[in-house]
Length: 469
Picture: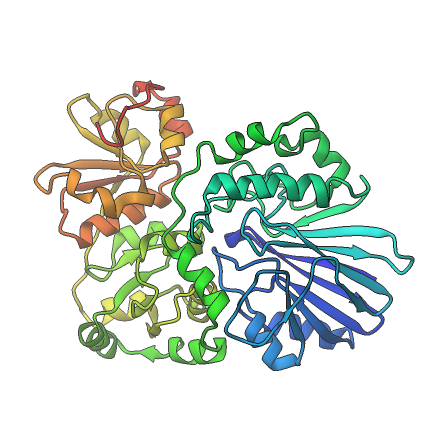
């Protein structure tokens, strides 16, 4: 028996490859199927099953393309109604994979169809559980993403989750390994650990949601408290996973089209495409195509794309570093943005060489910010409310990047603003969006917040009663 966790950091997502006696199963695959197919080919095995723990909301799963290319059967647990062919498993149903067995444990709560898959070894002994978003390391799945089903509330779903954990998971042996679908950085939970697997016994000791003396009422209160609104794309990704989607091959072919500067500009004008610049932030601020938006590949790319580009059908034109155009199209498709229509051939250097219009964002470091700081300047802190409430520049307004589209009317185009975050990534994203909307008086502060807070600039831990002061 062989188990491999295939972890994708930018999505904080874990897919799994299980192999036994010439047969393989994939659990929660990403959109691109090639890596799984190549792995099975290298090992001389056939992919027999594709197990889906639930309808994922934070990424588009690769189950359909993988099934089409390998003939593997797609397996969901109870309540997972789809528009495509799959096997709807019953609670307790088992599947043979070589000499091992995979048992279905229906564990509703995160979503109604959420299912945990229990792997038993050749002797029938429980070895590992693949918990999807039911149980994370240090946390459990949020119960508010599937409320749109009649009168069911997040409190109802949290109650189901409590029962699923106590009746289906916590009864298993302590040495069973827990393999979740996500780790720290995912928006599918609140307090996930940076560790990506653990034993069930250890989780019973350290995971707040598995406390033995916890009542259902206490559990419901704790898992529903402090939940931020989910990104808008979550519902659309879940719908794609349920209803079906275009082949990744078609998406890649359409997106990886090299366009000259002239053709690139014409495509932008004709299609109304969003120009997405994914270069490092240090390069972007020095020069970019006017009205383009920065979301760098080397940050939390996919989650920010999902949070900030509100329409999955939006045509997108790409400005990428050399050799990373295909990667950009693929990573957009992972979260359902399938309408990339081409990239700038030769990158931004080709644009400047063609003597076309260029815009910039004034960017300063900590030393310059410190020298110019006084309590009369306008500082926009684009970090999350929780980060802001911990500590912030004394006169700063909290202007969270996550909700920039909703709060843009609360700032003025006639005022000068200094933008900062923790590292400069989010402030650059925010500055690019504001610049594209006609805000010209912007100064972007590239500085670590730890350095800002340890400087002579006054900070405070006061929590504002509203988002903006």
